[in-house]
Structures are given as structure tokens and as C-alpha cells.
Image (cartoon, rainbow, N blue to C red; front, side, top):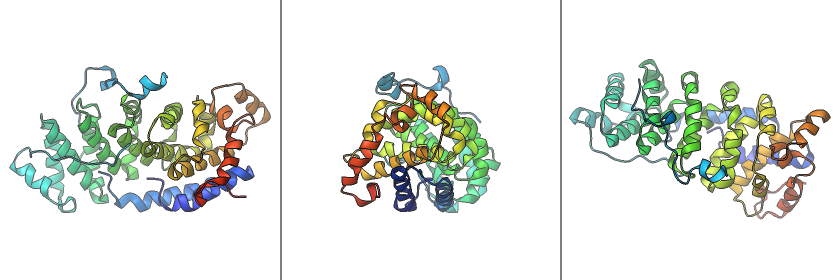
Length: 344
């Protein structure tokens, strides 16, 4: 979300042109496109008061293959099937999401809180997530206190339950009033990304939610400390996850108030290597949009000099005259995909 099909065809070309011309992408154009996309996608479903707690710090277990393990040095959403909690819940779960009435939503929230079976919890969350594709249900779930009930399962000990929690929250976050309540979980969502195995369904679901929450500028300040995490994930993840990471980075970089935090963030030197003809067009187009937004930022000479001294900062990696980015852009002139090459 925040990245509709109109953006690769129009916004990316503006970003590419801005990079080569040295003017950067248009903040006004990007924000118009992203907000329009947000509204257009409110009808589509992505299939994620207090749930079970994990005894580990923050309710999260550091797993082998996680980003922390790699850097201290994401898959289409899908729901599984499970046995129904009982006959009544089976009837509700089998209904079309659009046919559920308010009392059914209340029953599902109650069943969710009382179910000891992880597969039942996951199935209930799938049903709630599907119903949340409809604006009226997004409002009802909020009014019933369901946002906090569902978010409580972000700390569920079972990974699949956490994934379906994020998927349900993702659909619920398409409602701006819901975002006001969901913003308190941003830190927990970032922790899930950091602690989960790279390229896992958990990371993908969490990034989808952050994409929705970052479509407008309202909650960008909650992501100020996430830039290094996102950049680190960008260089170690697969193509599907890279695209989702870049959606968040493009959203954040379209906000001038976030630029100081972005350019000062610690960044892997390998970020610049992604600007390559071997990088997939879908990733490359979003990379160029991100770089275009960065290029639009004009620091004073004093600020630029201070940033230049930070060897591992994003400014030095992508924006400084010593960066390899310019030579990489020249190489992209030979890109076989016409939409992925800089314009003359």
C-alpha cells in the first residue's frame, strides 16, 4: 500500500529524471500519488484486551537467521485452515466476510481471547482480517475495543498467530481513525521485524503494516529510529521483501521533516550496489524513487561537511560526491527495461 501501480509508471520516471538532473523527486507529486493509492486500496484485503504473553524480554524470541544475527553483522499473505472452536464459531467463520453482523464480530473477538488452541486463534484472526476489508467493519471492530484485543496477540508464542495478527491489523490500519490507536504498537512491530528470521512471513506482514501506517506523515516520527534497520534489511533480503522495505523508505523520504534522520542513519555500504542492471526492475524503480527523494534535499555546506565525516552514514553512501551512486546511474543507461533507466 502507498505504492499503487500508478507510481512505477509515473512517479518512478519523475524520480529518475530528478536524480540525473540533480533536482530530486517532487514531494508534492509523490504525496498526491501515495494518498490516492491509500484511498484506492482501502477496499482490498491483504489476508494480522490482551493476548498470551511470552516470558522472553519484549515477548519475542531471537531466532537463528534473524536480521540481528546477520547484520550485528517476504511471501504473499496466506491463511491456513483449522478446526472450528465450536459449532457457533464454525458457522461464523464459514460466512462471507461481508455478511457478518456486529454481534458476529463481538463473538469472534470473545472467542479469540478465550481460545487455548493456536490454530483456532489463527483462523479467527484470518476471519477478522477478512472482515476488516470493509470500512464499516473497521469502524465496528474499533468501537468494540477490538484493535487492542487483536494487537495483544503480537506477542503470541506461535509465529503463525503473530503473522495473522499482523495481517488483520494491516487491513484495520487502512482506516485513519484506527491508525491513531494502532500507532502505539509501532515499536513492537519494529521489534518483530528485527528479531524474526530474514525473509519470513512475519517480516513481510510487519512491513505491510508499517507501509500503511507511513502513507501519511502523521506517524513518521515513530519510525525515526528504524532507518538503519530498514536499510540493513534491504541488503540481505529477497526481492519480495526488498520491495516492501522500499515502500516504507519511499514513504518516509517523501516527508522533508524526516530527511535529517534518514541521511544521518547508519547504512550498509552495500546499499549502493543495489543500483545495478542485475537488480530486478520492481526493486530498482523504488530504489530510484528513494534516491530521488534524497537528492531533493539540499543541506547547507556546513551540514554537508558534518555528514561527510560520518563514514557509515547514508549521506556518505549515496549522496556525497565520493559515492559510487553517480557512476551506477550512468551504467543504468544501458538497462534493458526502458522504465528502469535514467532519462537524458
